[in-house]
Structure formats: C-alpha cells, structure tokens
Image (tube, rainbow, N blue to C red; front, side, top):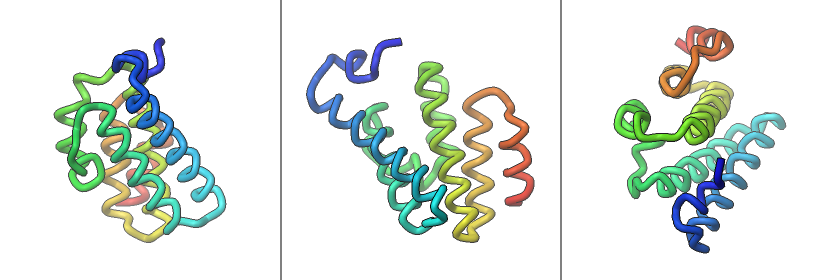
Length: 130
C-alpha cells in the first residue's frame, strides 16, 4: 500500500498532515499508557482532526459527531484508513474511559466496531462503558 501522501499527490502539505496525525496518535498512545488522560484526549482529538483533513473533511465531526462521520466516510475509506481510524477511536475510547466519560467512550468503541471486523476486546470495552 502506498503512503497516504503519495495517494494525495505527494505534496509536502499532505505529507505534513500525515506526519501530524501519526505523531499525535503516538503521543496519545503514550499518554494513555502513562495514565495521563487529559493530555491524551488533547493529543487524540488533534490527531483525529488532522486525519479527517487528510480524508477531505475540514470540520470537527470526527470527534464531535463520530457516528455521522463514520457513516459518511466509512464506505469511502481504504482498508488501511479504516484500520487507522478504528485504532484512533479505540484509543480515544480508552482515554475517555480514563476520564470517566463512559457514555462517550461507548460511542467511540461503537464507531471503532463499525469500521471493521468485530473485535471481542472492543465489544467488551463498549459493554463495560455503557
């Protein structure tokens, strides 16, 4: 599979956006691992908004209205993009659970499930958050 910046025309700005969300995702995962949930939610939200721009969405629905975002963009995504977004929603759900926002975390887990194969770990996380 080609890196997303090559698919988008190999422009410097596309590569910068890709680097931005990849760095944000790594930072969010590190914050989650360290139990720094407030920092983690900042990283994951910025990361997801940068990823949405790579996908062609300039708004913040990816974090504010994830179900609608996934319904609209899910069918258009490559398998690699679905895997990335599924991981983002799972990490975000884990971080938000750490902050005590279980209902919102359940929505993120549901979106992660909608993007691919049913993962028993996701189903358990979603049911625990509800």
